[in-house]
Image (tube, rainbow, N blue to C red; front, side, top):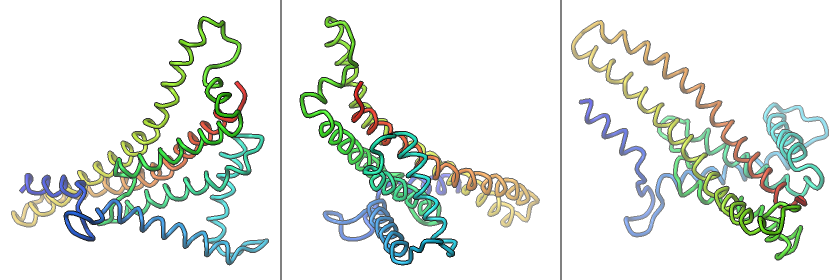
Amino acid sequence: MLTEHAQELRESFVPHVVLGNGTVGLTQYTFYMILVWIIVALIVCLVAKRLTLIPTNKFLNTVEYGYQFVRNDIGEGVIGHGFKKHVPFLATLFFFILVANFVGLIPGAGAATGAISVTWALATISFVYFNYWGIKAHGGLGYIKSIAPSGLPAPMVPIIWIFEFISLVLRWLTLAVRLYGNMFAGHMVLGIFALATSIFINVGIQMASPIAAVSVGWFALLFIMYALECLVAFIQAYVFTVLSAVYVSLATSSH
């Protein structure tokens, strides 16, 4: 029985086609990514339509607070001068990842950010974005030169430039892997605790044994882990957005 449950848990993380056929179709991760995009678009349209000078609706208050948080704490706090033009991009990243993470916490749903392909796509968007603004700020050749800090001795410039260029490319990798690893690991832990809880309940019921009482402890741990994962869902959206803002700042500033 344990092997069967473990197999079911493993299969739940494997991409399966939910719309279409084996040749062309949407996996559960792509489906939830599109669903999250629709939810975020609806939230933006709803808030924009009902926005007032003094918000009285709790939902609107929450969304506006989230936007102000991204604008002031991430945009202005990290990028500084000229941050306003980057706020829409940062807010889009933050709310998309946040909603995707929370949708993944709904029992039976899948986290789009639990798929490396989705986090790679988000990382690619961020990578292209901050390099675009770097080129726009310095010019093509100027941006390439700015990868190495200014003021270095001439013989050291090529060596440092190579290391800095590798560091630049690794930002793309770390953005994708960090988000994917944390969300996938968190959902795996929740799955394991849920599996342990169900096993103890089933064994206790079938054997009419007090062992079922152990499931109460596992359920308590599951509840704690679920609450912790809600916090992680917010933190990962924040970290991804902050890092993107840091990279924009580094790309556009004069070294």
